[in-house]
Image 1 (spheres, rainbow, N blue to C red):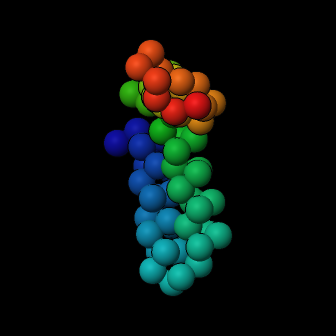
Image 2 (image 1 turned 30 degrees about the vertical axis):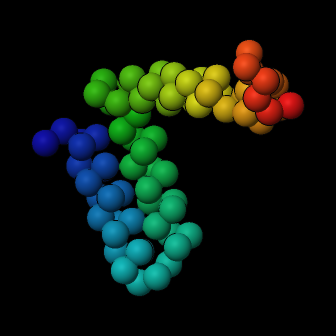
Length: 77
């Protein structure tokens, strides 16, 4: 196992231990460390692009509903 993989495993185990002891702040910190380490690996490099594409799709889908624009057949105003 590579050193980055071992660090990710330790961060996930740390988050699990903190969650079991009801230490929310510790669990969040360990989870964020694991996420940053994972994104730094070749496998996780596509995650920021995937999140960006997902957020763009959500934005395009919700903008007409939140903006109050009407559709062609006389929908909401």
